[in-house]
Image 1: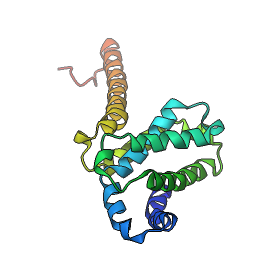
Image 2 (image 1 turned 180 degrees about the horizontal axis):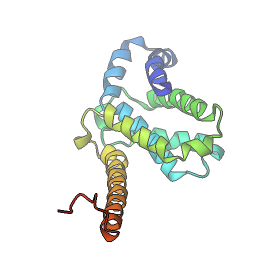
Image 3 (image 1 turned 120 degrees about the vertical axis):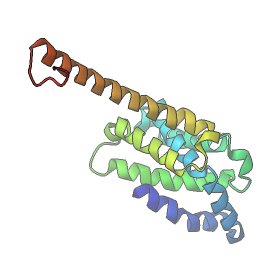
Length: 179
C-alpha cells in the first residue's frame, strides 16, 4: 500500500521539481515501460547487497537503486526518465520504504527478511510489462522466486515421503497404497 501511494503521488512532485509539466505524460509513459519494475529490482539488489548494513548507508543504498534503474537494459528506450526524474522518484519511494520499515520494528530486522524480498520480487514481476524481455527482472525476481518454489516443493515432498514411509514401515492399515 505504501509503495502504491508513493508511486501515485510522485507525479506532481516530479513535475514540480523539474519545473516542466509538459513532459509529465511522457515521463509517466516511459516509467510504465519497465521503470517501476526496475525500481523494485533496485530495492531487491540493495537488500541483497547490503543485508546487514543498510541502516548505516542509506544514501549509498539510494544510489544503488538509482543506478539499477539508470543502468537497466530497458533504460535506452526511456529518454524522458532522466537522472533528475530518477532522483525524485527514488527519493520519494525510498522515504516511503524506510517509513514502512521503521514504523514499529527496526529497519534491519524487517528489510533483510525473506518475506520483504519475496514481496518486492513479486511486485517487480507484476509491474513488468514484459518480464521475458527484461534481463534484470528475470535475474533478480523470477529466478529467485522459482528457487523459492523449488525449495518449498522439495520440503513438502520430503515431509510427505517421510510420512508415507513411516506409515508403510509401521504397517498402518490406512496407508493409501495398501491393497
